[in-house]
Image 1 (cartoon, rainbow, N blue to C red):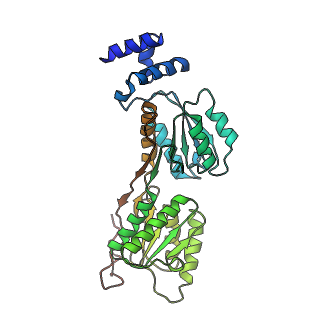
Image 2 (image 1 turned 45 degrees about the vertical axis):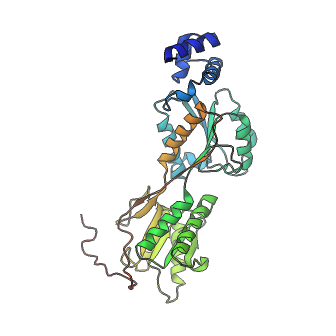
Image 3 (image 1 turned 120 degrees about the horizontal axis):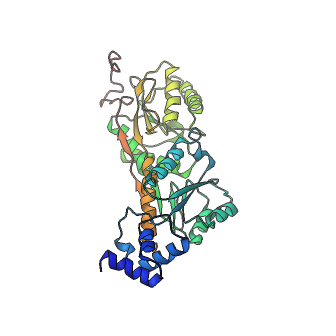
Length: 357
């Protein structure tokens, strides 16, 4: 049966006009919710949705829940850019995008339910919300919902996230492959996602037959602040008491890399001539103190785009199995990490002409 006959059959079954059916299946906004529901239910029964192009968005309103800081670029640039990528991915569709601030943990359940039950809420995205009770409610509301950078431990909701564990392992492996064996990790473990990165880092150590010792190999920072990182890395360096320097620092974000480089510079140490510095982030600062920053880019803009695609599939196939899509990071090789030759702790690097234009 061709497309025109399908539209005619849906119109006959629902008692709606063919133009109304066509508008609904095209994702247009100028139809009532009642008509939209009838058309989609009939189209699903006839198997029309299974063959529709993935580019269509069968809703007109999407609500994004995220921590308050996600709506301020200065407070959380990562989440802010994820939200911008959702907006960009929806730009070609007639979808009204709305927002609601919700705490990561101990979220306001009444606020969540009241917003989800609003007539204008057809689907939702939960960004960075770890409250398992909210996940329970989202599953029970029975409206399409996709999680970004968080997980439903009961595996009812689809989710998308960076592969934090593999990203940490990949970054550490790069340093080991560059010849580094004494690497200090500077991390903030405020969320389980960062703990996953540390698990990956430890896996890389084990893979290279190295023993990871936290007091020696890990500096924990309470936040991603450059200032706090500089203070704690500086104290760690001052407490070396004549012991050999590590050959590299693996740092949990670009701003933490700024703090690490500041601490090194104030103690007369050069990057990468004396110590290498690598970041797990890499979007916000391409260079620090005129040193191009080697980094593993954590997927950010891709999260919003892929979440919209995932939501499209949930609308077309609501009974499909829910799963988690893990996105890989990408390596940006620049100049803040040098190669260490086997059998030599340091490779002499001439500072002349290294960074000239």
